[in-house]
Image (cartoon, rainbow, N blue to C red; front, top):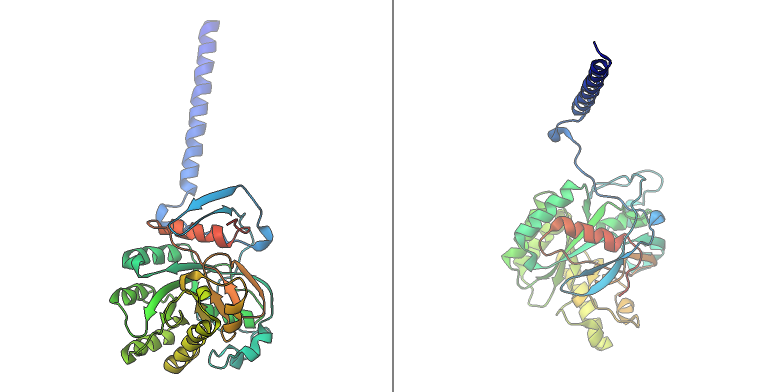
Length: 335
């Protein structure tokens, strides 16, 4: 064998060895990779206010308003998830009478002195959202292991001296009426209740009151759906006189107390509008939460607390949840 033939043979042997080595590595990786059906489904990032950092602003625009959002860095710390209808246990659990919604009164507000809590991700919907998108939203909530809760249910955390879990999501549907109720509202609500999901409905109590609708609302309340006040006439409150605001806010509170059998803890502001002078919060002192749209991504002090909400993406409900995360779990936006 010549020297040139020896060199050529050695090169061939090296190539064969490399090919066999790569083939073995590929086979090993394939053996270690579980089949798609057995892979864990993805989980959404869980944010912690202690890890939030300012990044480049993200510009987003929808049909309501435009603003800049600063992104947030997700936390690596695990967060325990509680079911919506849970029972607090242990030394920190509040006495049962303190969590009874029928017994809560503004005189108990000293029990709810909060140093600082992030507002749970909260979505604002109307009947135009429709059943199909409601189903897609429920699928995404289930896929990413989020926990639907209500403003009333997070009260139990606050009475125990803790903030709601960052896995919580509050879904609200506005503009139900106590004297009229379109079937599309019921169908949207049923999408959630069929999955044992809870949500919040904003009720306009313009009379006369319909007994059949109140029977339906009491049935929702019994399975954990929260009935919140959306005033009497859905007027833009900052444009009203103090006396007119009093009638809208207090009058709706008293109507729900009378017909539901328990008093509301949440006032959802028509058009999301609140005055800069604090008159509406002062008049709404019987409520725990006053809910608008912009701002309100954290709360502190004593109730009533102002909390914000966010509208959905038009077509992509996975993107809806991404937008909620960016809005509620990031540094303050610049309006």
